[in-house]
Length: 251
Ligand code: BV8
Ligand code: ZN
Image (cartoon, rainbow, N blue to C red; front, side, top):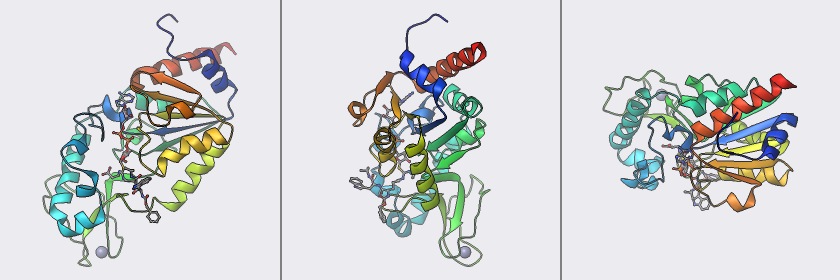
């Protein structure tokens, strides 16, 4: 397999010896599908600040405005496809004895690419629930411009974690367990600026995992990790799975 050396032989050997591999993904994994990230130039937040939209008070003070922003993002996500990075991560589930995909993304692209074992730390934009009775409304038509009202009269909100809101407890606990038990942990396409998700690569590092980061630029946690791999996640992950598969065939 020719081509430029994208990552170290050490990462390959660590992956081949790994019993447990866990991955944290952020918006950068969906960038090559055409989904705008949050903090890159031209990212979603550029026009708005998180506190203006992705928080409960903004929703209560103007439900239709926040609802329309999510409808706009649902529209974007319905018109894009998973990219090579999503498909490579879906394939990794069958390459390692224990593989866990932890995502901050709410765009449902990992599921659409075939990943099964997904920890959705920040929820999923395809799900909505009533804030009064928690009844779920999951097949909302994109035409709904007004925030939905539940049969009980309550407001229906997207099933995503807003700033200032707790992450789903079970999911976060399991994600922390995965980080602690991983032999290799990959932090992919995330600026590692949002907590508590950003603690996971550091928990993995402290627990003895080999932690590599895949990103087009360094982040606030890069120097704390074992390896930084520069590049687009779609390109890197596709190549990584090709090498792992050819090594496993050899073994
Ligand atoms: C909580 C769902 C409190 C909604 C999201 C100060 C210090 C520490 C914490 C805080 C603080 N001030 C406030 C907080 C808490 C806050 C927080 O962390 N704020 C940050 C901004 C400082 N956290 C919270 O509020 C969390 N809740 O703490 O609760 C609490 C505690 C106890 C009791 C009660 C309450 C909730 C956080 C969840 C917020 N919800 N999303 C929605 O999406 O609408 S966060 C949002 O940011 C998305 O989920 C997104 O995934 C996430 C993180 O962003 P990234 O995914 O990293 O995306 P970003 O654009 O930043 O980066 C993209 C990266 O990809 C870049 O590095 C880029 O270089 C790279 N890239 C681009 N293209 C590619 C690429 N890489 C590879 N290939 C490419 N092609
Ligand atoms: Zn209700």
